Length: 296
Image (cartoon, rainbow, N blue to C red; front, side, top):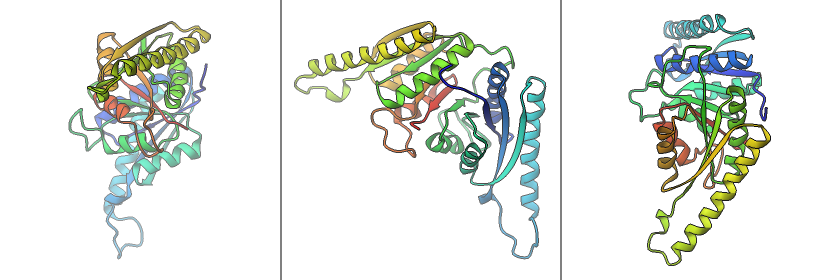
């Protein structure tokens, strides 16, 4: 495989959205024999200090008890399906920072999480913990929407995986992860490049700009084709037109895509703390899991 996945982290806050994400993480860990880590972070901002208390406040004890129940619930589910090691942890701090610290400390390869936790209220609003984790994580993050299909662990199949590309370094890294997942599930890879000339409407030479973008797209698609052929993975490619996020979401629906793998930064990405607008739009609106691969 292009990438090795030995350890998967599933963050949880006990919500239905987190549990749906956890089922996907358990399924992947069961499929590849990876170790599973289950983490719940008690948000330190929710704990009011009690200057008269020598130890924990009652609220802190309550939050920790809820966090322990959340990780224990996921661990019990995982134990019926996994042969690898299962590790549970409850940490205190800012949730996305606690996730990142855990990743660094425990050498995590992949995070799988729901996009909405206890504070999520509709599909188009990306949960704040998921959003901040996406923007700062040093490893790929698979996001799972709360209204996605309920996975029967062990029966999940990703038959069609979409790898959008813009020829950037961020897209190049995502290709490796997408092909790795395609190898694991014996899936067909679909690759897509969108020629978007909307920014150049009415500009002199727009036809030449379109041709140049299309040529760049063909080169980007060929790169994915070469990687897929080297891995002996079935591949289909296509050039679309219009804004990239819209093209990706439309293609996903029209071709029964089961998972999208893409970089968190494309050609316009700046730093680790900014998620590319295309990726964020796709994560917010996709009906299937999205594997977001950082530049690191």
